[in-house]
Image (cartoon, rainbow, N blue to C red; front, side, top):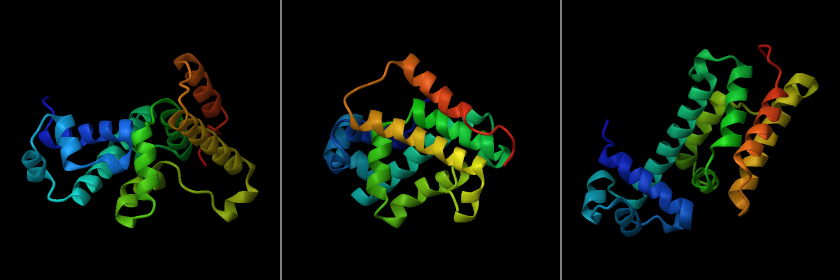
Length: 182
């Protein structure tokens, strides 16, 4: 199936962010990366903010698709343990610098944060104070923090772990999760 122009633009924008950061997303930089004219971008995105919002949604949708694939089911059909296991595996194996940068940048703007927050609510809900007394819940949250930490480590440093080591770390983190429904 052929990639739509809109998807082509969003993927090009993600590559720009991966290389140069969020502030580098301009119609000119994305058009050049996508091999389109600035007018071609304006046909799909009326403003830079529309483009940025589209990138947020596109990256969040890709992230959720990876978790759905890892769980073997969409979030609403997976158990809490399956959702969190999928989250930890995806976060430790395939999260990108562009995702991290957009999540960070978007956290200050409610509209930009919405796609990310929706995915997080489905796959890795926050720890509540009432759950703090449950050892299994604390262990699950610690596994989530470990997965997030590995993702941050690889996103913020020049070091790339060998895939075999990253896989072993991901499996170790996932194995700490309680397999029973919680």
